[in-house]
Figure 1: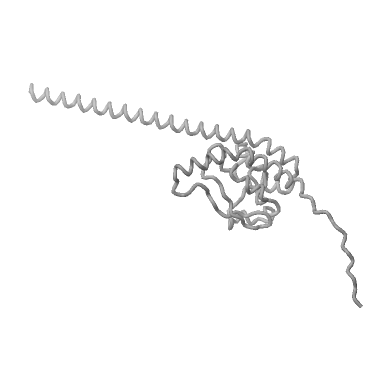
Figure 2: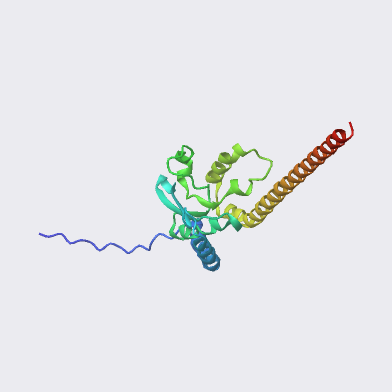
Length: 215
């Protein structure tokens, strides 16, 4: 006697969670919009022929502690290095919002709460970077995000990210200009000191010649 198998009822595939759906839709749209800019930046870097290569590649700790190879453009200008990570978002290795991806083997990356979510391009700690909070509060902000994240918080962080990126670029530009002005002032002072020293030597030399001629 043979037993017949009952046909199993068809079950629809499990729909993606809202956070993953946001990553897929918005990540794909951002990648399509920024692809020409990223291609031009990669070509410019390739023409410059950097010794280290066009991309920075290293292993980072992802969801459930699984390592993955992260590729980024070797540039910090206009945050193109972060935008070049958008393919990782579409593939599901990164999220648009989450804790910063830490290198594999990092003690901080082994924290159990970090492995509950995908690391992100931006996050709560990144948008609060230049607030009054001390730098050592960053892990607490990341942990707070992991424990309380929801789609509304992700949208709020994404809305603040461009403003924070522009503020960071302006801060760096101001710092560079301030450093350049300080170097220019130091150079001018050094030139004046050198000129004064040359004039003093010339006066002493003239005095010595007059003394030698008219004892």
